[in-house]
Structures are given as C-alpha cells and as structure tokens.
Length: 234
Image 1 (cartoon, rainbow, N blue to C red):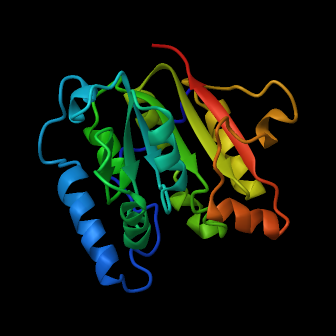
Image 2 (spheres, rainbow, N blue to C red):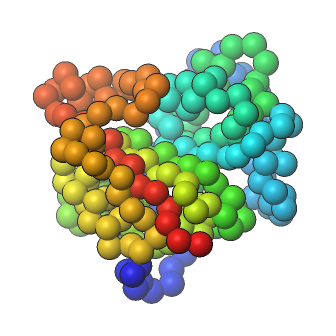
C-alpha cells in the first residue's frame, strides 16, 4: 500500500535557482526557448496530452531535473515519435539546454522551469509513458531528507499521471539515496522494481549518453546505480 501522509501543498525540492551570470547569447537562447516551449499552467491541459506538441507524437515522457539537458536532448533525437517534457528550475541548466539546441527548436519538446510538483498536479491522469529522475539532489543531511524528490506524496503524484506499464527511472551515485528510493518504491503498491540480477541496477540504460554529473561521480570513485520501476495496476 502507498504510505499514508497528510495533505500538503507543493514544496521546493531544489536548491539555488541561479549560478554564474549568463552571457548575452545564453540569455537570448534561454528567452527564445522558453517563449516558445514553456508550458503554461494557467491554461487547462489538453484532453490528450499528445496534443501539447506541434508534431504528431504517440506518447509523452517526462524528465525532472534535466541538468544541462544531455540526456533529454539525446532522447529527443532517439525517439522522434515521442513527446518530451523537461523540467529544470535551475536557470543555468535551462540556459545550457537552450544553447545546445541547434537550428529550429524541437517540435517534440516542451519545457517547464519551476517546481515539478506543480506540473505533476496540472497533468491529466494516465497521460505519461515514462518519468526520468536522474542524479537528483540527494539532500544528504537528515534534516533535509524531506526535500528529497522521492517521497510517498510524489510517488502518489507519479502513479496518478503514469499509464499502466510506464517506467519510472532513477539514477544516482549516492548509496543512501538509492536505498531510500528502493525502500519508498517497494512500499508503494503502484511500482514494481525491474531488476533481475545484481548487475542490472549498475548497468546504464540503453542509449545512455552519460552526463557531467555521472562523470564527476566516477572520477571520485562512486559507482552509479540505475533503477527502473514499472507502474502496475490501473
């Protein structure tokens, strides 16, 4: 069963919003991307979430906290028939992704630059075919654990918007957060862990491009884990 929890409003699961001052070219790329791709939560979501995209797509996936966008843009190029929603509240990360887009903005990509829980609450039920949460802030101090994105209330949010059979993928190099995520997902009746062997969860996902966070973790001697959970039930 899902963990019981009191009703509560959205919380900030991210830290600072800005880093170094953006260069003029970065600002221009950021403003252009957000003006055309940002999702407006003041409007009602479409009856079919696929209608959110100018291009014809067969399903929609969500990446929360995409950092510099390396993985997100790689997936956009690999799956032209899939619509992607990327969430990143860190301005410099969003600017990095915007600057990395070459030529016309992808018609299968939409963006949101604030709290992902607000977007999750806006999305219709059974609308998402996959959620990626890759190298999220581990909030290592015990007093900050409540700010970890994986929680009973957020898994409830995931379960509401995910289609049966949709995958939730979680990657981290922090053992305590990996164990935390396993414990929370295995206690939730909507998610089933997909590992078949001890090596499964240390094997990168198919087509995995790597990220700068992962490269730093490996350099510092930490072994990444790649967890996959399937949304079960109806």
